[in-house]
Length: 356
View 1: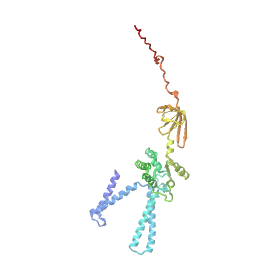
View 2: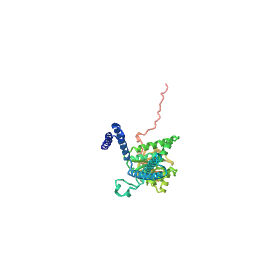
View 3: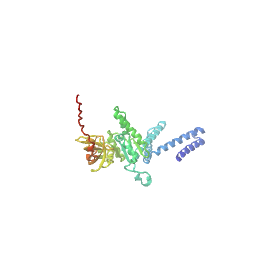
View 4: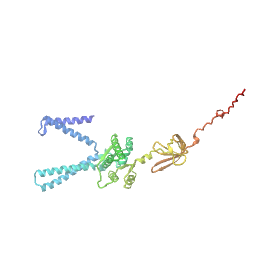
């Protein structure tokens, strides 16, 4: 609230100053309006700068200074080749603005590559982490579990979303295939959900690497440039990135690591869903999707039973649990008592009365 008051006070003071001084030959009230507009523009620029990292600010300043210096050199060449006049003045101004703008944009985009730790304690308040960036690829965005992980607070650092990944998502969302179109729209919805998470830094970068055509290789090059980790579900991208020395965070591997540990001999209660491939087998599933193959459970389909774990098989596709259902664990069937058994009906002989 104090910051809002300071901003309003700044705009008010600038408007009063212009009202009293009347610059640019303006009368009092138009000058006050110009002062208020200038103050509002400065406040808007300041609010925009608050979202920019210190690295980008330093990169923008260095780029602007370099561009202005280059423009000065070009202006000397123009002064020696073109006679004084409006054309030369226009060219000098154009070169100055062009070089300053190019330097500002390039410096801001490349500012994240600066190593502030090398400057000593001058920028001690800036948190510098070599592995603080995590790049999201298309597969992990469409999957959606990254949003759940981020909401729990386990994702630290900055989540980087490349512009070429957004373009790929847009192409999938505009596909004529309904399945692909739904997947693309789901990915865009997941991105909107991630952006709404508080205390999570999201950064969309324009780095494109035009010489590289495949999206996977663009991600690897971006990971090298930012010293970042790639978050993906793509098995092939995982292997290729590791070959290039780029660290990868695979959501599927994380999900497998978080599954509960089951040891042989433990007893669990499962719901027999269907019959298995082998004779007298039943198949059940845990809440996380792990398949449980149960022997002697074919007759128990549609029921909850206690299963004794016999072995656990870990494969690249996931985990499979093998168990056995002991029919002896069922309550014994009670036989009817002898006095309750149904006796066979005895034939009834009806004698006819003797004819008279």
